[in-house]
Length: 443
Ligand code: NAD
Image (cartoon, rainbow, N blue to C red; front, top):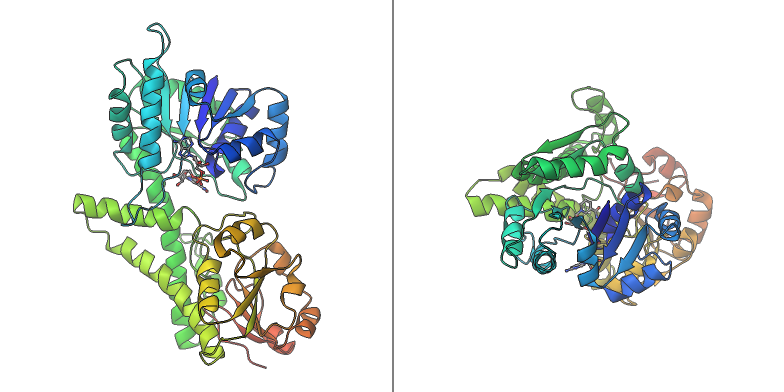
């Protein structure tokens, strides 16, 4: 099929590449000229394992192209996927301005079609509040009287494992109002669900809601275990032991129940807020989700308080090392990353920050603009440091050379926001060690 993918971010780029890889003829469109120039020079603007090689192969095969030319890109696709961002607006609601702008462009493109051209299917893949497909339909219909179909196809990929998630999805959710659009979408996704995982076709509002329900459920699990971790700290229990006991119950399971610095990234924070916004707009109380958000914000503050307490509130001039900047491993995405909240606090109180992250340095530079230093390896970041703060659970931090680390640091103090190490081991190696939901280890 001829496909147009609008937006070459984490979702659009992976979607376009994986759909080209199954033999479709794909044009990826973006309004960001720099991004498209980079892609046309073979440079990938994001870090996503395996993506570069896959893009290269599909570009070479002539199935994948990148463009800023709206007229020709929109004319190309029998199916048009809208994959633009839907960040929070200043009231926490989903900002739909990019989605609606695409709707207007699509309407104009459809109006230029010949009367006997087949109607296009316009698919909203961006995460959007229930009712958005209807609004996009109205936006398109405002520009043309010609016929077209709408579909909702929320995306469930995880950054860092995006290609695998797209190629082997747990499920594909498709919302349609008419069977012919459902049939075309099913055909497109058939190669991805051969492993027995289902394609679920449903009405559009339900498909839109599935994405928010899934993401807010995952955010709820994270806030839940973080609240349990706070109770563990207050009563001298060890959250790792509590997790072990609790998660062996098959009704509970062990996924997404790791205490830490709270959820971050470009999805959970904004999707929880968007759901609360949907509740406010419709007069539906969302007490649980409001608490999920509050617990998440509190989690970062609780961790920062441990750092402040250790230094007696005096951070001026202290050299602090940071391991991990990205909001999670295997990505360079720093949107809503806990590291940003922690580093901003440290800088505000006069600390000197040196950070190491295997891939997120460029993203960090865009945020901190020269206010922090970077090192090419984790140990150099700790040279003469008064403390190390672990913000991201990259694999390379999981088994460090503790002797080497201690010998480089000015004071052997570790604040571990991901519970990567065992308190008794850290204590025996002479570290003062703070983690989440476990008593501090002090030698
Ligand atoms: P992103 O910010 O990385 O990328 C969005 C892209 O859209 C940018 O390159 C931007 O330049 C482009 N764009 C904006 N307006 C445009 C227009 N009018 N025409 C063409 N291009 C335009 O966003 P993302 O992380 O890929 O997320 C996209 C959507 O998918 C969001 O709704 C998000 O919630 C959802 N989602 C994201 C993830 C994820 O892990 N990032 C996972 C599932 C769903």
